[in-house]
Image 1 (cartoon, rainbow, N blue to C red):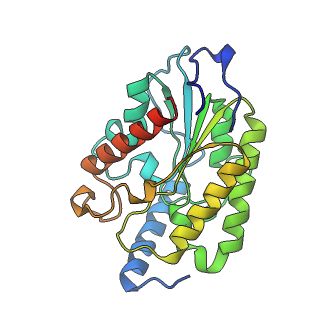
Image 2 (tube, rainbow, N blue to C red; image 1 turned 180 degrees about the vertical axis):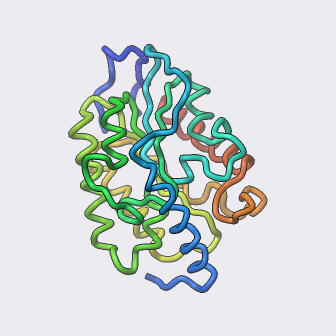
Length: 241
């Protein structure tokens, strides 16, 4: 178990850190792609946020719509904001709808989401990616596995003093294609490779609860995000955070 991060930035801790879909799944995937296309176009500029406390622990999120909070009635209700407010952390969340390590990603390097995270110079980095790569798995599985490692290596090289928390990729239906477990395995392997904290089980956090889904059927609603925040809070307490 790692020690909690000191909010004093001068004493930051060193990191110790297919199967075919059926017709319904294809329809869902197409819907996510459309949303992602809109989201990626704006990924170079983060949504304006409240003034950040310069003395607070800076926490950045590299994620997709489940971290951005799509489906919630307000960004205040997304799990990332809830756990940051609980701990007095300063949140930087430029997450993008539909984005994967490969899926719907056009930039690799300057201007991509990892570059925004690096520029924020955070004390803690959450990585919650992988869900959307299931929709590219049949054609780009090798690229996905390679990019996971490349992104992790790039982030840790650029942010050697940050603590990395890698979360098992989220999932949104009770039906789980074989690619889900494969990508989870790759993410966990890459997390181990950089010495990151790893939070397992997140792909099951809203499983079996259709009432926790927004009207689009793709994303959590406020109740779903509240459950994710509760699960994340418990996992972070286990890590001493």
